[in-house]
Length: 282
Ligand code: F3S
Image (cartoon, rainbow, N blue to C red):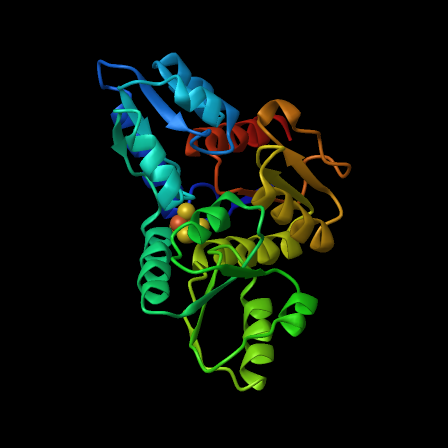
């Protein structure tokens, strides 16, 4: 049996950075919190909890906090949320991914200069809600082709278009073409991060060769669910697991190629455990 593990499996740069920051903050002697779970991975959240890091899950919970340390997530927060966090008197440790932070700055500066802001992305995603909160002017979020076609803009003013970092690059280009054809004055900033695309492309390539494909990810993680969907198209025996305990023996037994990949919030230790068990049990 041959095992191929994707090089891009697991944490992206921004998530690794946020998790490292949270573990560093955990050493603080005072109370330490993360504003929302630091990543979509229960084992990491539980491990941090053991080290005394608590998760703030709502604004009511936040209102009960006075002092300590609060770590934000890689998705980032809106300006209003940032101010709210500061008003608790806690020391704020910003773990926003630098790529997301760059979008905040663009939106802040462009909207302050009078541009209308358009975000291509999912309006319900915390990253998009955070980005919206850095604009000084009303924001339009476009997530579908219909919404791109229905978009209208009065006057000569400039439109600044940015994207959610994990948005599909082809769709983004399609939407921009639709807006350009209207003759609007557009400043397009492609803020899509290549980490997601690279992970998906590598998973697809491995799944094409694999007899059994294993996708590791938390059940609540949308990027892991997307990886599973991509791999299943190429390899019918694709397993979506949270840890080695969920592994099933492949129908063809232990021969052939087993591919392994993992979503952006899966720590290396979990990937290594799966590798070990595949080697031992398949
Ligand atoms: Fe940052 Fe890209 Fe990851 S934006 S959080 S490195 S997917």
